[in-house]
Length: 135
Image (cartoon, rainbow, N blue to C red; front, side, top):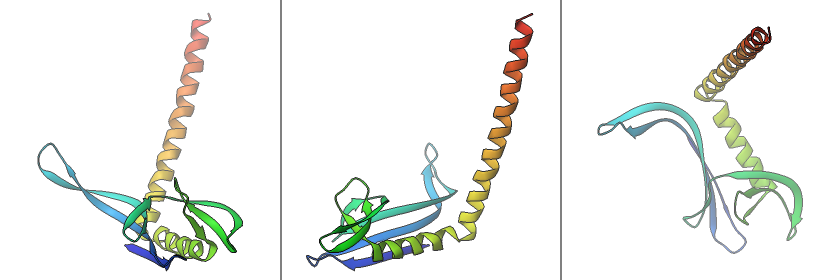
């Protein structure tokens, strides 16, 4: 799934945000190429084909040159208007609503719960072992 958001800058150049949901990729397995499943978002911001960045950060609304900006391309001086950020947020919500993304979030939630359970058990064992050593 791929979504593109296009608009023109004041100087006439075309800007584009590409948001892509990647569900598989090909990796090198020490020789043969193997396709593995994955679930990740890829964001890229271009201006006239020149990559400006790979992430957008939300910022507090502020006025710049008579326009309200609410986003910034991470690591650059390119700011994004509130209208474009609304379109970006809608595209991100659309990707996050896919079954693949929801399954990924559920797997991460289960992994976090299993990790918390393991850490609690490890802490109990450390306490139990240290109490035995105090005798």
